[in-house]
Length: 293
Ligand code: ADP
Image 1: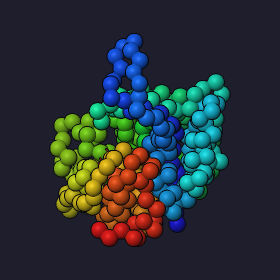
Image 2: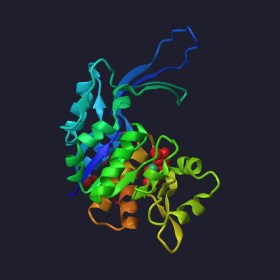
Image 3: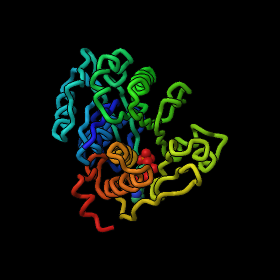
């Protein structure tokens, strides 16, 4: 199995469900409360590890009581956390989520994720260069992502960039990305003057656009086409994109073609949406093998 480096965010979601959304200054009674592990970095690392990749995580936690559980969750999922650092006098990444009438209100506090900088990434150059592929998203700083892109270029390591949440991608980072994997709305923000079809045609075999229940659109150098995903009864699509990234990185770094890697990642992501929670539905390799679709 291949070795994957994931640079990204680590956080806890604190979720309260309520019938009445509180107004300013109001206190209401909730129905339920639960915590789940999140952060796109953590989700993608867990997704790849469940598919039996060896995963090294680069990211930071704070010095609060949530830090240990965040790191333990990664370890429990087989992710190598030896490079994860804690930042003093800082909270761990947290999302405070209120769900009412199936609509979300979210306050996201980056905390220690905001302390992931280029210096930290460069410190772990040796570990990065020991990997077969590296992955990053946008919940850590641009300078950290660029430092990883530079190391990947130097070491000729494929670099997967998931430009989520959307922020402008510098040309110097874009040109170093081997694969750019936005979802449909991020693709429209990245290329406002191009249709999805025109955008993928501009970056053949590089720009792969995830399109929710439709699958993934890309151009193979000759034609643009959709690789359909699998039909499932979706109950929670949180983390679908992260499962796709973990699956794609696993498959492509094990030598599968782009199209076969998309198919495997579609299979993993489609299974993930059949269960609640970003990480709750992420399948193991044996679950994919048992799939009857
Ligand atoms: P994001 O979660 O980043 O918004 P998408 O919604 O595009 O990303 O979903 C990512 C991938 O997850 C899709 O390309 C597909 O493989 C899978 N997926 C998402 N929603 C569904 C669904 N309803 N049914 C089957 N597969 C899905």
